[in-house]
Length: 502
Image (cartoon, rainbow, N blue to C red; front, side, top):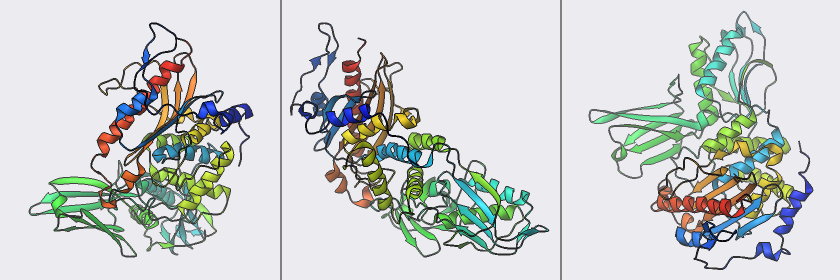
């Protein structure tokens, strides 16, 4: 579905002010302007550091720094730095995915996971196949699978005469989000029409004499079912810490004994989400006295009678959590679902990202967005801060984006959150190695609202890090801290400069 265009004056004021003909809006600040300037308003006004002074002080090395800040109501551009430079958005892309998904699916959309019978139930016996069917719910967890098994029993089923089938083709099956991530990171799992626990498996180890006891499970707050579709072996070595192999039926992991201490745990990515979900459901069905055979995936959704279902929260609630916790699986699943709603099931994540880029470009009047996924995890995605702000100004109000974003606290000179700050900041953060982004809205003390995007990125430095070192590379933590400080100092500059009440 397609919503009406937003008010043309807002859209094209912003577009016009950032066009090649608007030389004032596009004029770059001096390369170096290091002295603080007084706040407009004359004597006694607060000293306001120039943007270039703040950038210089951040000491981000060879990183590019671009930003745009505009009046969120009129689209009037107030200040820019390299507004047309395409940079990686990192997880700020999730705000764009939110716009894309709400436009295509609507705020009331819910993802359903269903049990369908291909035959009648007679005397408790299902005279046909039982089909576990997913629609791509990225928030399905172990507790809701347990609920689904209880609902199957409540529907009168005590045994299944036919096969146990699974269907996950509502979305394409992708074994990972970004191929340039370390193999063990839980934020880069598979995505499919059947997802469970954000497609992560819990690995736990405990010291036992000269060795360790290990467990791989799909734990939740109330359940802890063991799984066989993901398996771990401890190998005597120091490096690499983890290895992964797909043997066709299971995810086979090894971990270096030299990296294990006494006790510990971590979440590992699942590469076979359909099998993972089926195995956990089987264990809960067995607990209800219903024995199911080995799961058999099918390419086409079988026709039959629905016996039970569980559903996600509505899309707005789901997206609010996604933006708060920056969950990559949620972003990819809802982005893929939005692409499916607009056309055929995309074959790859890059294809779906291109569809979102085309949609966004059409909505904001720009050919520049080039996104390779919906989460921002892929470092090859590019968008300008101009286009990010265009999206916030032109598309955000129509879907009431601002309250879905996370409140950002201003920090003092010692890095402590300020108890009181005169402006309200609602925004999405983004972080990759040597990439830090922030975009959203600032409500000034007098009520004026600004839309902004500030991106700091050093893609060459990021790309130079070997893949196996990208989980915790040297120098990234301090660089990111300086970039985050710069983003807040820029916001503080804009709050002081553009509030019309003081």
